[in-house]
Length: 394
Image 1: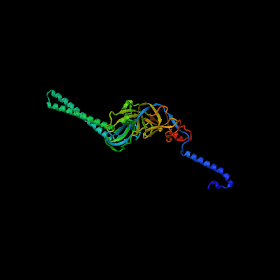
Image 2: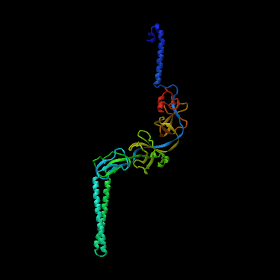
Image 3: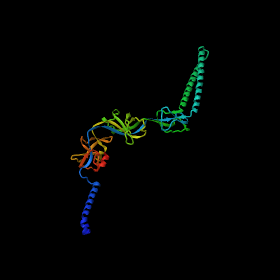
Image 4: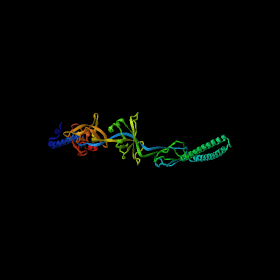
């Protein structure tokens, strides 16, 4: 039964306008909901677009590297004995020559005293042998002694001299050993964890700690044959590297610029790579040894290229494309050849020409041939389809 028949005749005329108005409101609400749910917009879709112009851009070659200290020294004991003192705080900076450990001096001082006594005894025996040789040689000129006695005196003096030299060497060794009781820092840097504590008996050659010089910090990396093909002339020449940068694990670029300080003279036959190293100022110890970083080498400058935001480049199975504003303000996909990234831009080496309008936002809703209304990035009016997303991408 229709709604009109259910209404009594005496009030039917009053309700009909009201019902018609309610139906109209519901229909408009349904249309609005459909539009908000992603229905096709009326008129061209606003999109952010930029007109590209030919420019120049640096050519970068990237590789993965690992940092290391300029000097990484392992501090070892040079004499054996009981460790009696540690003279530094672990992890703190130390000066070159600063005493890090002290080994018990008493046995070394006793050994030095014994060596001094032996050296003195050897010196006395040498003096006696020298006097005996002089006396025998004088008597020999008078034929007062046999030739054999002169030969024995010469041999005794030579033996005493050799023993005196050996005693002096032993004395010098004992003096050095006593000096080695204090274990100094060989270089200035950051100290490591103490591997031996007070009271431990250490032997000659035992590792006690490490000292790492962090300024400058160095980065080891390698380039493959394919990487080297990107250099001017198709081969690597350290003299043609214009700049060196590193990208830290958090994605930020380290502020200080570096320079190559080592390039291997041969290719690793197992890996097919060439080892390289760069040095960077690191006064604040912002970069620590052992970190993995990306090394960027500027190997030249490419002219006649275009800069496009990374978000505007789409990778497909057939390659890279960008969406452009074509004839009649319609979407026209354009295959492009890409180079390297430079900051937030992608360097386009082919496929574009000066004046082309590249769409940089609202890409997900675009279809080839779709009418669009180009405007500066992020300038779409509030409420336009994809306005919020476009501003976010910009």
